[in-house]
Length: 189
Ligand SMILES: Cc1cc2nc3c(=O)[nH]c(=O)nc-3n(C[C@H](O)[C@H](O)[C@H](O)COP(=O)(O)O)c2cc1C
Image 1 (tube, rainbow, N blue to C red):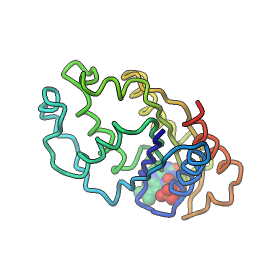
Image 2 (tube, rainbow, N blue to C red; image 1 turned 180 degrees about the horizontal axis):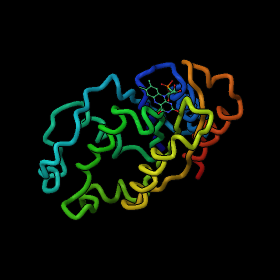
Image 3 (spheres, rainbow, N blue to C red; image 1 turned 135 degrees about the horizontal axis):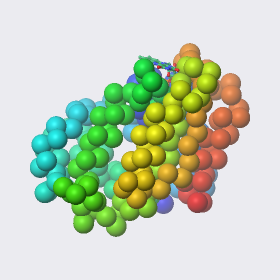
């Protein structure tokens, strides 16, 4: 069982990172092999909508996303953690998500070769926002929820937290426990 953590904040050691680490600790505790990718340390360009991947299943942009595509395919569960930037996900997370395009054919069905690995894959999401009202991050939840619904991925857990300064969320034991439990759930179901 492999659980992949995707950090969409460029602030390493920040709030999204702290909660992602909690989730990965939960997954590890439940017996999973875990790995974390920090998107801001990778070179990931935006999707060009060139359509080539519709035929080949391989993106024409030769950057770090090609390796991440493999990690996605190999993972049993993927937990994303991302803060709100201007009422939306960060540019790093958006570029990553748009590049999932390569997994689909021209009819937005999983490429046949990928379908067995992608269908039903478990997806988790952690959102952070400076606003005390955690629903400020709902547009990000909507984006992931819709993506999962339309493609047959399984959104198994969402944790939404509020924090502003770097590391502030570490004081919130309740939300750290929620993230940890979500990580366990990524393995135990
Ligand atoms: C460029 C930028 C835009 C932001 N926009 C919002 C916003 O629209 N709403 C909000 O509640 N917080 C906003 N924030 C605050 C972050 O979501 C908040 O500080 C969060 O804890 C950062 O998480 P991190 O430590 O994982 O980077 C913004 C922060 C930055 C740097």
